[in-house]
Image (cartoon, rainbow, N blue to C red; front, side):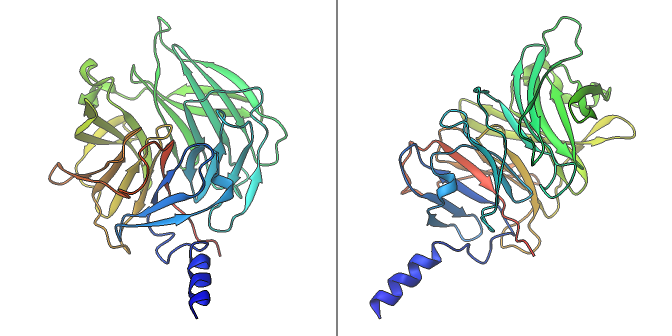
Amino acid sequence: MEANTEEEEKRSLQCWPPTAGLLPWLVVIPGSGEEGQTFYDISESHCHVKNIPELQDKVVATCSYGWLVIAGYLISDDCFLFNPISTKKIQLPSLAPVFSYDKCVLSSPPDDPGCVVMLLSFDIGTVRVLFCKAGDVEWTRQVLKLHDEDGSDYVRSVGVHKGDIYILTWYEHLYLVKFDNSSSITLVDLKVDDSTCPTTAKFYCRFPTYLVETCGELLRLHCNIRHRQVLDIWVYKLDFDEKVWTRVKELKDQAIFIGSSSGQVLACSTEESRIHGNKIYLTLAEERTLYVYGLDLCALEVCLPCPNVKADWVQNVWILPVLED
């Protein structure tokens, strides 16, 4: 009987808990050579230890639509899409020669013919990009010039809205990444009125900024972080018709999750879950702390998930599994 119990426990570690697909998991991935990953369930405040070989010694570049983009340029030139629920893997072209990226985006689910995987590296005045589609045998490489007069602009954030990729810069240019054909892209400046977002003042320019889609809206988040302490978070949404940003003080049943890996951010509904909406969950690089910011009261909660996990992990990322039919 005891042997059967141990076998059942072993099998349970290979299956996702029933809440999978409703809320993101905070996943702690240890350093090179260490096995196992710790999945923190925010609704139950409970940790699950799993051993997923596809995540061993790999870097999770981003997670979107239930798929992970694995692009471990520091460890391996191997690159692929991975669904942690179905364990389906879609191979992407090798990253050799090495391409050091600042941001990765997946424009849509892999079964969408228009799905694009894009890696971006930021330089002053320019953006170097690699992009491909599932099935491509090589990456398309291109250098894009930002439309500023003195060549000193810099990328602040990159996000996806309805399958389109957007780039926001320090000088408040919001660009649409336009695919002219399968092998060429250009930047289209949407000419958004920068005066409609007070946090664009120089004082705020170094605060982490994120673009995220939720409920059909494109949001921008400014996180006031000083001395590794989260002080405040401002949220704005883009009015595409008027080309202005408007302040958002309520997310209703939506929650936003910000990870420390490559500016990762995602949003989902909390309607059928055990947590409340209108909150922003945030982790910082090289920290074990989880910050929970309530947008209604501008109140901050701080907790220490998975206290038994070693502090010297490489990544803490949010993974939102999607249950396939």
